[in-house]
Length: 117
Image 1 (cartoon, rainbow, N blue to C red):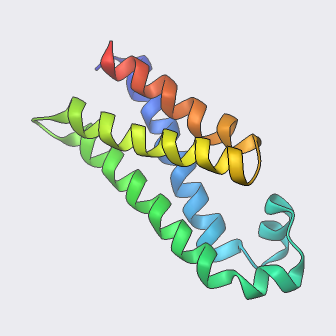
Image 2: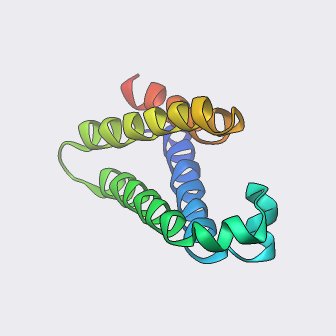
């Protein structure tokens, strides 16, 4: 892989670690509520669901890290996890907010494009 591909994939990893942090630890706090536009009551009620979602984002980041350091099958590993992120981003964009497509799916699609080139 080249430096542009590595940079894009690292960006996607950092974004998903940030999503993990927001959803697992900041969801019910003022900053998290502001980022997601949540009322205090809803944030408190849905805290466990958000933490579960954050954990999944952490697993996606872990998969990309694995793909970056793998000595064999790196392209297949990265492609699988990038496609997972694209699907999750498109689904979130269609069901929650179109902003999710731009923040999650587009960077992953750029990474997938570069990995497959």
